[in-house]
Length: 187
Ligand SMILES: O=P(O)(O)OC[C@H]1O[C@H](OP(=O)(O)OP(=O)(O)O)[C@H](O)[C@@H]1O
Ligand code: HPA
Ligand SMILES: [Mg+2]
Image (tube, rainbow, N blue to C red; front, side, top):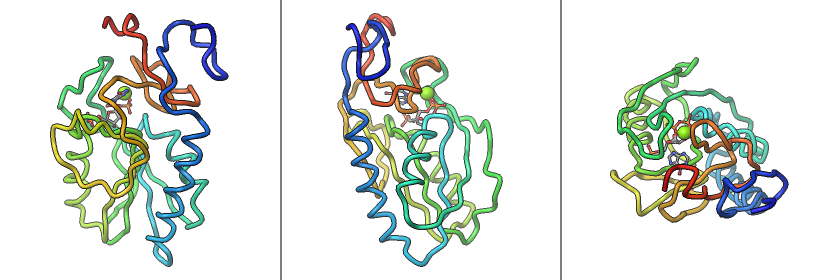
């Protein structure tokens, strides 16, 4: 593939799954719903590093509701394309969320293992409310059922990169979501 969108990725990418324009439009739509839900309330949005950085940055700016922002770093994938199922906290929240309205912002729900673990971890800290907004979800990959209030796109069960999502730490800065060519991950 010669050139995909505005970043030249050589032949590493197979296709563009969701364009920058589609992401922008979806985040505006989600932001309007989130604004309506939290009108008059203090909202803390929690980004899950590192994948959710782009969604957090763009969603936060699309919201009219004033928010505070905090970050957690957890990792279950390492350098591979399969979740290990073992979630590690690499960085905890800086703030106490007891009594606060908390919205977890994720880039993707794949097996659901990361979020399921996060929901029970953060839920035990007694927030006033705890909801989830994710840009992407793979319904066919779910290993646990999770109640997610706001979902951008349901996507096929393929490994995707871009807009925060990595393969071995690469491709996070693509402005769109694409699928990797199988030769890149040994497929
Ligand atoms: O539903 P799951 O199967 O648990 O997968 C989803 C999680 O995996 C990715 O994070 P990763 O562990 O790769 O860390 P990263 O965000 O730093 O890339 C992604 O950002 C989600 O947090
Ligand atoms: O499809 C994916 N791509 C990148 N990172 C991920 N983490 C879970 N699923 C994925
Ligand atoms: Mg990752």
